[in-house]
Image 1 (spheres, rainbow, N blue to C red):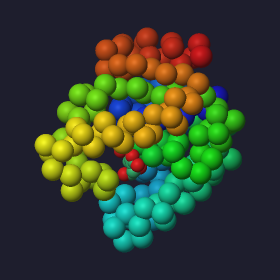
Image 2: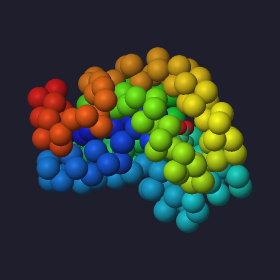
Image 3: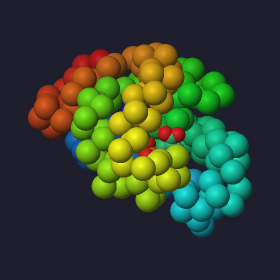
Length: 169
Ligand code: S3P
């Protein structure tokens, strides 16, 4: 079983990914972390030194490698992963795609604390961040909605409920 967690930055993909993988006893990977390790640079450095287009290529290639190598895996993707190339179709073809449809206010609270490591938002003033999130989310929603499973308000559910929903999907 391959499970791909998708959703906006700060939606809880990495948190839930690690919980799920440990429950299912299968490997967990974070796509950003793999790209970062492969390049020996932070995501912010990759964006500033090589540009977003380069990052998106690495993202697509790394996603493909994980699919090829691991028949059982939980992968936490980046917020933009399903929105580029045919990544969403590929994830659906080879596994279950779960969208964490987290509330904008919760995303905002989380991202306020972690702007630095995220190149798309690091230069956005705090007072403009909510508008940015709403706009970007509206553009990306059409991709996120293609997920096989949608989990609304993940912060309200227990770990067990989360895992059961996915196992029974
Ligand atoms: C991005 C989200 C980031 C990372 C990169 C671009 C995006 O991942 O892939 O900064 O386009 O939304 P997280 O969703 O893990 O923050």
